[in-house]
Image (cartoon, rainbow, N blue to C red; front, side, top):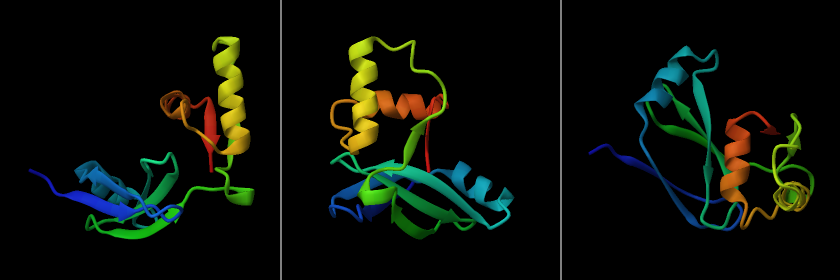
Length: 118
């Protein structure tokens, strides 16, 4: 059984657990700064950035947020393929930072490169 990372959300303090991933260590070894940055989601919907070094140790934890404490996300490809009500909910979530109810859709859109969060 591999160990898991346990961190607290810097916004609300909720406990976040994530499995140890050997691929993160490999990516950190290839990275110029020796760190691999990944995003975790807390149970309350906040996105948390963690930096993992070449030894598999978490070196930095930061809330993923933009101005006003909201995630700094933007739509980089058209959302026309989504039904109108879902598209509007996603756009509202990006504006307000309240991802409740659309977390999975937003995460899938981020992975597909339709939404980019800094």
